[in-house]
Length: 74
Image 1: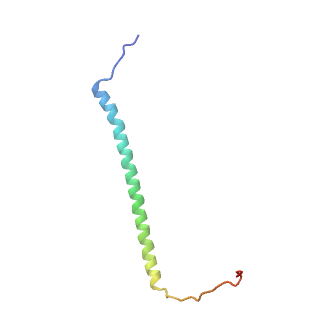
Image 2: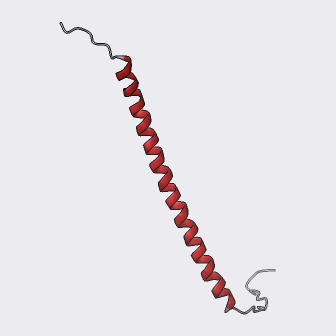
Image 3: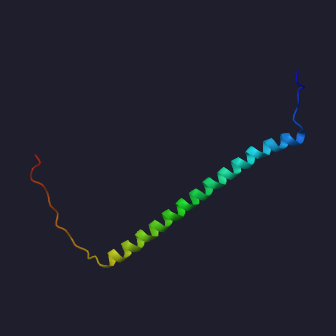
């Protein structure tokens, strides 16, 4: 029969800290991906806004006449 081997306190501490380190690394990777996504979104919104501002400068206000359909029963 093989003797029962209990883990030493040092190896037990190492095995517990390894998953915590992996979890922290994965969380950090997710954080950086989110940060990149937010930066891309901000950049896209800024590009869109700059395009809208230049489009707006070439636009003129037009007052449209009110148009009603005569097909409704009264």
